[in-house]
Image 1: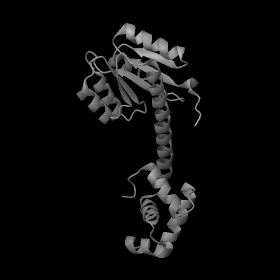
Image 2: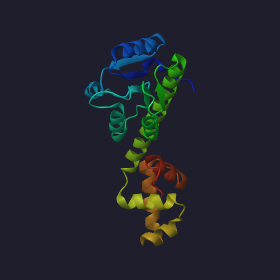
Image 3: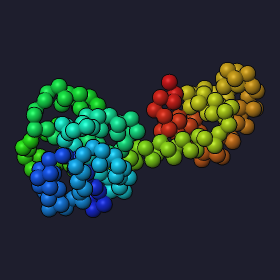
Image 4: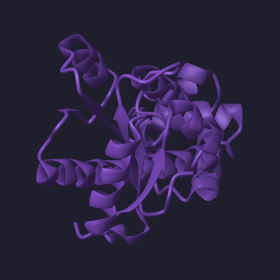
Amino acid sequence: MIIDFSSSVVHVVDDEAPFRRSLLFLLESSGWQSVGHASAEEFLMAAPSFPSGGGCIVLDVRMLRISGIELQRRLKAVHSAYPVIFMTGHGDVDLAVQAMKDGAIDFLQKPFREQYFLDTVERAVRLSLERHNAHLRSREAQQMLDQLSAREMEVARLLALGLSNKEVGRQLVISENTVHVHRQHIMEKTGAGGAADFARLILRANPGGLD
């Protein structure tokens, strides 16, 4: 898939000013919009919104006060769409393992090859767009489901699981005709065409919605 990265933004968070400036220069000379932050606190204060073209955070592991690992955890806690690429000058294996477990895209030891770094940035930005678009689809599906009454949601879920109108009525102790009426209301409110569409909608809103 061809993506226009002209509106993508790469955030570089590193308390070593010369290295941060050189990385920003590399990114900008390679066509990326980039923003530097001298600390995790500075990044959190800026609270950058997610750009339409996607983005990522290039993050130093060891910084004073709030470490890179702590910033990653805070971003994860608020479901940030920004993927994280870690950098370190120490080659700390334990930190690398923890960072990757927490969802980091890569863990680069300084100094790293410029082309590998740029390739990793592109991979991260592509992933950020996939995550963001998936989140938008999930939110849109949830907004559709929020239009349903509690009973309609029960009916939709059972139909999505493959039950017939009669089986749904038996399980909910309502008439088959009442199930049919609920089914029509669900279709009108969500635009879904049938049980398979109900299932897709529920799973898009919540991957565990049919468990």
